[in-house]
Image: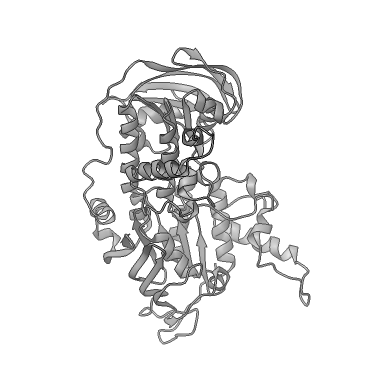
Length: 518
């Protein structure tokens, strides 16, 4: 990576003196209909600095990023780049000035190759031509920058065939190839394996040490402490306190600033009233899993843990009818159910909350009412089989109030909510179904610590009302904090089952999840 060295008195564009922040926001405010998303926010990002931005879902983090890169225009305030005031027209303009944004949900084209995605919209042309792509030059540069970020993939591979970690590395390589001085990373580790997370965090340190600045948006406080230099907390669109050196602040202090209260219990206590058996799964077999058997009781939460490729999600999807099963029995309340579709699964009392909320859990261009009522439309029919819109709106609003959806704007499209609030919309949809068995697949992925506690409370309420829950999670702390029993899977097979008591340790769970024996 090429690093430009400078004299103390230089101040040309692209070179920043130590006294001048690379990026400075002064009094940024942004108003949407019915909500003030940002209120007088001021932030400085230094050269070669990792600036962590934390806040609950709906705190204004995403809006702030959009204002920086030109997707949204601030109503008030100034943006200074290299000490000079500027207004970026759009993302392309921001990119041209050296700012790259990498989002949790990547916007690449899956059917195109790695090299095609890296240079899409920024193709290298053959000299003295206007529209002939220099594929040789693109391949050389692609290989160089992929090597820089430690991504060993064939540049001709289709993007859709890659792991999420590889995709993130390619996005970073793309930003480096474009000469980015500031890379904005929005939840870059949310969907990654432990190895991939460590790879991304190490790369962030490498970039910082080579003079690249990073805005790091994350809900994982341990990762923030590991790579961050300074931290800014947002709440309800406002900056809380001052930007602080991250080494001088505790996780407890950060959480208190984020949520505006002290979270006495990250995992809310509940009365463990486990009742009669509700589910028997016998020798379930399907794509990427074989011969899985377990049972579940009313009022019980069964946590399922496994590493990448364990087959947990595939098993859950077959159980709920989202994918076809090849064999085995599903018995609900003593009656065998032949579940062949999600609709069939709902009729059998099983609701599946997908880990992929944006593509499978929501219709992003529809409003909250339409999304919340989607799985229970029949309950809103009048005697004449017409949809009772007033009833649908009232019940949808009531359930969203209970789930603390923020802001409570029922006519706003789902795409305009933060990740945690989108998850609440998905939860509201399935709570209305009044299922017997809920399957939660990574229920708090990409969700801040305050919203996590609210989701755990919702789950506890479902259990208290006699439902049963299967929770698939990659977070060991969440697994042990919420489960009554723990089931482990490895390479498509069930490898163990533990009662979650004082004798259940992370080491025991991980031993079983890696194919070992206790």
